[in-house]
Image (cartoon, rainbow, N blue to C red; front, side):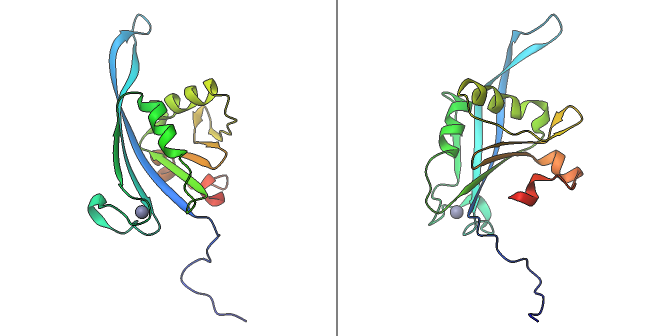
Length: 156
Ligand SMILES: [Zn+2]
C-alpha cells in the first residue's frame, strides 16, 4: 500500500484566484431610508499556482500583471477580465470580502442581464457562493466561519 503524504493529491484543476473589492458611490436615493450603492471602482489582485506564494503582487510569468483596477464599468470590466481565455486555468475562483453586504449583488445582477446560468448555494437567506460555468464567486467571510458539508470549496 502506498504511504500517505502530507498533501492531498492534485485534482487536475488549474486555478486562477481573483480577489476583488468594489468601491461604491451612495449618491442616489433607493428608498426613503436607503441609498443605492453604485460601483465606481473595483480593485483586483490575482494568484495562480506559480505566484501564490510570491509577496507584493509582483508580475507572474504565467498570469502576468497581478493587480488591476477597473472604473469605466467596474462590474462588466471585472467579469470581462475574469472570463478571458487562459489555457493554463480551467477554473477561476473570485473571492470578495463580505460579499453578502453587496459584493455578490453586482455580479449576480449582471449575470442575470447576460442570461448566464447561475448556481447559488444559500445559508438561510444569504448567498454563500455563486457558480457560473468555470467561475466560482466566494464570500471570504462566509467561508472563514462555516466550513460545512456543502462547502463549494470541496468541489473546486
Ligand atoms: Zn501567477
